[in-house]
Length: 220
Figure (tube, one colour):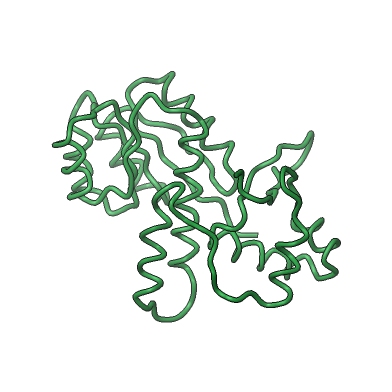
């Protein structure tokens, strides 16, 4: 199973940062690191821990998050109450992959993170990218903008998709049993279907052990 994507939250409001960390931990495939509240601590933590993604506030006590953004060589999404057009343009000009206005719901951040996960999976595939791959990766970053692919599906992929019932969530092992394939095969096809936007991934916490990835059809 792929390792979780590690997320650093940079926000000087401890309670907000803690809430956002809980949001991150609730999304399948993501793990929140201990939040930090200043630009200087953010730089130190990024250098030492090498997170996959930074969730960055604009208003920090020792620097503007938008100025800090210029110094970061790591994927970054802005989470901020700064709603002026200049801040938005500056954020994207300086490399932000997304911009989420506070206050937002757990589901809004979850959608943003799932979009980022699709982006990572699309760009993590072996081989040279074509322009179609570039466009799919760009669209994947926009929550709700990924529609199920119209490309022909293999018999196994179609069977995996048809095994899912609307409103229900399944583990890869359960899908494997329903389709009659190995768990690894089911996992591979479920990941591909998630990249196409045909399947959603959720996280279920059990009483013991590692949280389980669950797969289902997107809500209509």
